Image 1 (cartoon, rainbow, N blue to C red):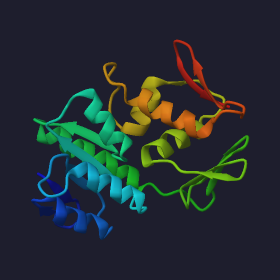
Image 2: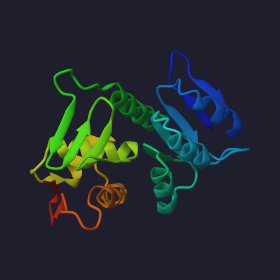
Image 3: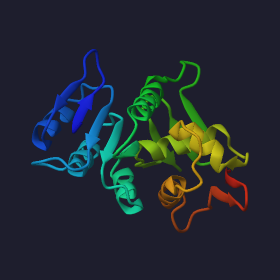
Image 4: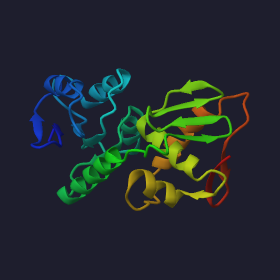
Length: 207
């Protein structure tokens, strides 16, 4: 399934050029995007989507299942990555998780989170440190939001994995390492007091 969207009826196209045009319409609740499409590959579509501000959740599908390829897909802005062949029920479950995550809206009483110099706007989905806006990818934003909601508490890798990705922790994956490393470089650049700390043998702490 090269590219599709969950709506009243799923939309489907068989090549990258048409897929890019549909994705850029920004009319979809979620997109499943094949990594290897004729015309324009899925990674190019995803990178271009994120560069112009389209934040539709994207589930990447690919026969390229090695770690480096998964990392490339996630770093390009993918919200999840599923390697072929896969069980259709697993794909459905992952789509449901992404849709639930998209449907969550902050209440009027809660429009922002603040921890020290960090400010997170839940409505605009923006992050600032010391008043300077920080550009985060969707998954990085969700990791930071979860950590800010649990500031000054030790967050285990299992807690973070299940809260952000929505399924049970796989000790063989390095998803958390990839995203935490990138988040740290953005939140704690050289010359500022570090806010994200590793709790050896336990997980992480923000504060």
